[in-house]
Length: 313
Image (cartoon, rainbow, N blue to C red; front, side, top):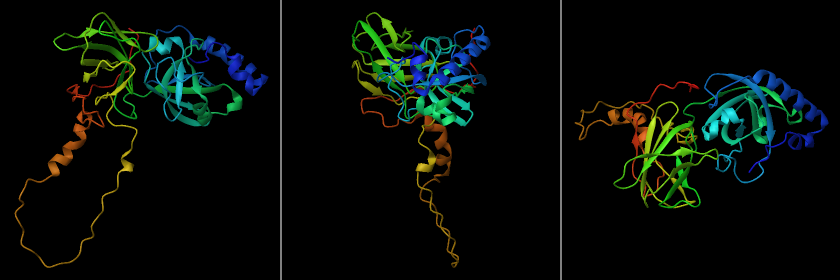
């Protein structure tokens, strides 16, 4: 899907000096990488190096299309963690500043601490001519996403072979299970290309899909139809909020006080709306946003768990 097999082809375009810098940088990474267990990056600050690449196709190894802002990253085998990191976000800081990138691809030749960024992301934090730059990076738990989770059945899915890809999850997903009408939940196995598979008869649906992230939060999407290669937007999310900011909404108009003669106080015909407006932010995670008519409401965890870095144990 993407060009991650050799360093040289991605760097030769910027000159032999860049290639040499890359070789020296790889040597440093091999010295500093050490042994590490396979797990997505945690929210602790990590030190490393960054290179960049151009996507050689229409999707990365996570089997999803690149984000609209073209800000994405490919992780080495350990931190890619068998696709466990797919769809999560990292804040990466380089010589020129900071950028937030989506885990979208794998980089088999990258050691721990070596991030292979999109060219667009790399140019935001470093000089393209340098080819390789020092960075710090960390995971962003509950990062805002462009919308709720989406679920897509892969090509070849049938009542005998259940396989989906999930996007807009924000956090690494630890487990997925599903059930059809009258059935019980069955666990799905994660593949390296970010497909969750239940090998066996699941019926024709519709399905409930239960997902748990690495921080322990569980959400359930309902009424997922067996429609291969058709992206289905759910109304569930691990993270509260989207990348659409509140500044997009018009500011309330303030009325100026004008002197007037006192008037008798009128009895209010209905209860005050203050209490409902105060509670609104707390209900944000349960409101269906732009969900199709055939999508049911969602089941969310009763309480937001404390975010902790995932361990390798």
